[in-house]
Image (tube, rainbow, N blue to C red; front, top):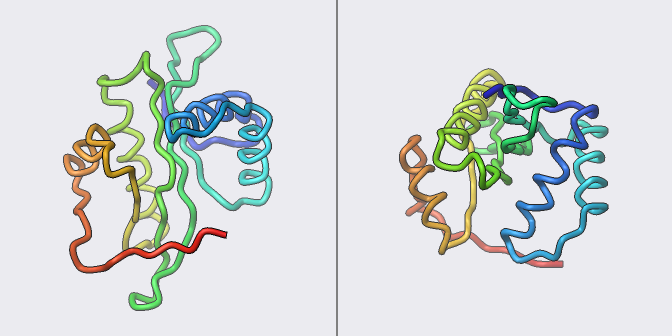
Length: 150
């Protein structure tokens, strides 16, 4: 398994994975929207995407991805990252791909001088929560999260 930072030339590999990720969160399939969203993020340098590739398949097949968005901590006066998307294809689950993507995201954040990586997952997504806790993430017990949908 090869994990590397995605570039614009990887949109055809990432976008279908992103569409499946959105479907996991009860969004209707929309390959065009997925392709446009991923293309825009990469073109505008608005996110960092790491792609897991099955380098034993020919051509290499996407096994999953993680997408990070840059933020800043005012209290720490340092950069931070929002780990917004993590997806592993069904064929590759329970093989350490998610863990490796999470570790790659962590190393990227450390290299960027970040103070924290934040993430949010569905309350009923216990599989993901178990992984996050195994790799060192802690459930926030100090702050209450609010959202304003527009």
